[in-house]
Amino acid sequence: MTPEILKLFPEAIFKYKFEDFENYNLKLKKYIYELQKVDKEGIHKSNKGGWHFPPFNLKIADTIQQKFALALKKYILNTFQNLGWKTENKDVQIEMWAIINKENDFNLLHIHRNAFLSAAYYVQTPKNCGKFLTEHPNTAKTYHYPEIENHNELNAIAAGVEVSEGDLIIFPGYLPHKVPENKSNMDRIVISFNVNIK
Picture 1 (cartoon, rainbow, N blue to C red):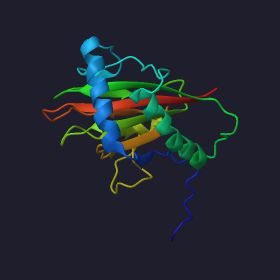
Picture 2: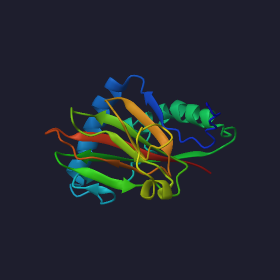
Picture 3: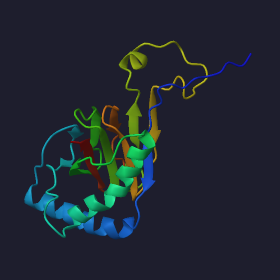
Picture 4: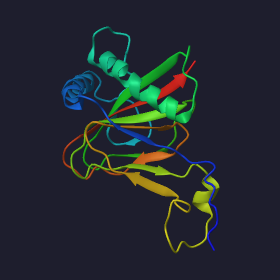
């Protein structure tokens, strides 16, 4: 007996390879380390250890952070189109920040409230620095389920995405996500951002 399986409410994660990422990453890495020199403490959000910077100033003309934000537009637009969202005459707003995780640093499970989309862009990803990990947004499903015999997409409660430098992952802001410990002795550098429509 083979039923018709109706997947009515899929959760999508969009993974892109950023165009000309090698050039961008050299400049972004320099910019982020300069920020860290000025503000060694950073702020504390989901990070355990590591360094989390407040939002970038994206209004300064001809800066690497502004150029990067402008280059992101086509990926954000493509995501909107795949989701079937209206884009014409919409004011798309981005809030962006950087995170450096040193050896054994990690980020706790969290969501980005008040954001339609969230994203992670990978500037530096040494071997064993950690995947992008996500859990099912339906908390009832993650806490109460029968014993699983055959793992598949219908019973999955958690998933991991392998990442490398230049990868851009865009996902719903409500999707719970986290970062495991950086098992490398090199820094893991990520730029995260939220996308809203006003």
